[in-house]
Structures are given as structure tokens and as C-alpha cells.
Amino acid sequence: MKDSKEVQTSVDSALEVGYRHFDTAQRYGSEEGLEAGVRASGIKREEIFITTKLLPRFANKKDTLKAFEDSLKRLQTDYVDLFFTALACK
Image (cartoon, rainbow, N blue to C red; front, top):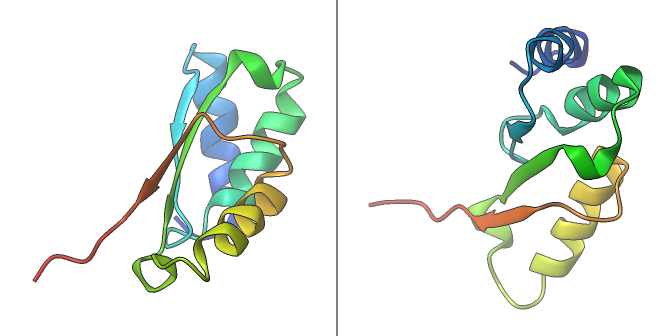
């Protein structure tokens, strides 16, 4: 799902039934939709576990921190609970 509204609707439904762990990634294009769903829920951020992943092309010393900060901006949070480096498999 890349459509932010569709992601937000899914997050809303998941939160309603008790989900508190969300897995997203820069590649998925769903960070902003996740943020919108979490914000709209009124549930405290610290009650939700958010995982996101780094695009392989940013997995280097120079680009990783900027890409991480970009994810934080899209998620509109000060932290994520788990941050993965998604390496390409050959």
C-alpha cells in the first residue's frame, strides 16, 4: 500500500482491534500514512511499537543518518523502536 489514505484506514482498523506494532519502510512509501493513522487514533506514541527500514542505497556512512532523519520526519516522531538496514540479496 502506497496510498496514504489507504494506509491510514488500515492503521485505524488495526488499532481498533488492538494492534500496537507496525512495520513500515522507506521502500513501502507508507510512513506518512502510518503517521496519520497513529495521530488520528489519539493513542500515545509510547504505546505503539514502530519498525521502519532503510533503503539499501542509503546503507553507507554518508547517507544513513539523513535517511533515518527523513523517516522520522515522515513519521512525525522523535524515535522509532526498531530501525533495520534492508540489504539487497543477490
